[in-house]
Structure formats: structure tokens, C-alpha cells
Length: 204
Image 1: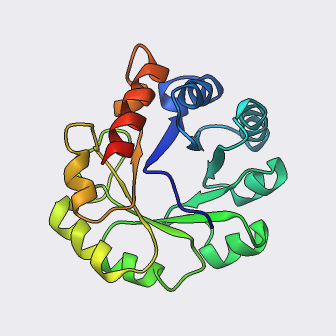
Image 2: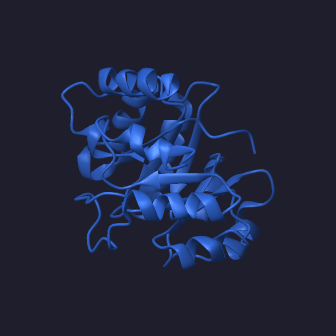
Image 3: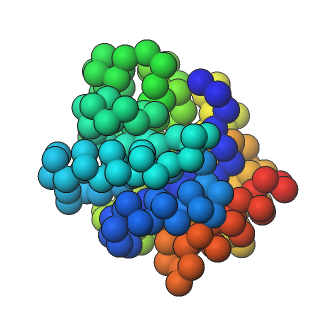
């Protein structure tokens, strides 16, 4: 797997049409975009992912939240799984080799266990309080994030409540990339906000 960009943008349907959001994120320079639509039917999600892939720049990678089957059928770059989704081993069998598989963890024990699973990166969070996930797990904080980054060998994607104002601290804790929803999408100009993010994280 080629290295992940510093910015891992998420086109979350709770902020609007994920197809339009993804297009704005691409326009702003995001090159790794996850499609997240928890309420979509299988066919609706497949349609959205396929439309996003048609709009994606040639150097962009599109990840599907939760659904390894949709990712494979659509030809997306990969899938991101939560603790309650299909296991990474089963998802890898669905995806096949060569596609990205990410896995969410919420504490040191989960992250250490995930390090031995067939996942390409480990998401760790929430680092800070977040309102974009119902029933969110307890906040990790920077010290526990740093502990995870020290102990695991896979790239760590930090997630949860990350803003431009605190992202430097997250990178200093050892995260390879940061997954961002609200601070990108809760903007009147998503593309402009994405450009701001890309400039900042690439300068870090």
C-alpha cells in the first residue's frame, strides 16, 4: 500500500449529499476520501460510490465505510471497518489483495490486537470529544493516542474532534494521518476549507 495522505477526508451523508461533498473535497485537494452513509440501502450506497469514483481525480483513493462488498463491486480503493462490522479477515477475503483495509480501534488493547490483523491502517479515536458519532467511545486524549502510535507498527489514522487548531498536537503524538468530518464539511465552502487543510497538513 502506498503511504496514506496526511488528510483523510470523510464525505459523511449527515452533512449533505455525499457525492457533492466528495466532489468538493476533491476540488479542495483531498486525495483520500471515505464515503460514509450509515442510512443508505446497499443499492443507494453503491450508486453513490460509483458516481463518486467517476468524479474522482486519477490520483485519488475512495474508501467505503463498513461495506467491503460495495467497495469491491464498485471498484473502490478499499473499505473502513468498525469494531462491530465484518471482521478484517472476512473483509479481506471479500476485497481480495491490493485494496486498502482500515480498522477502527478505541483503546490500546484494541489497537494492539488490530496490529496483528490483515488491516493496512489502524484508526484510533475519538482523540477529542466528537458529535459526529452516536454513542461515541470514551475520549482517548493525546497521551493514549501517543501510546498507541508507539506500540503499533501499522500507520495510525487519528479520528474524532480533530480541527486545524489541534491537528499539530495530533501529529506530534505520532499519528500518520488525521480523519476529519465536521471541520471540513460544516463549512459554507467545503472545497476552500479542504484547500486550507491540505496546505496546513502538508506543511507539517
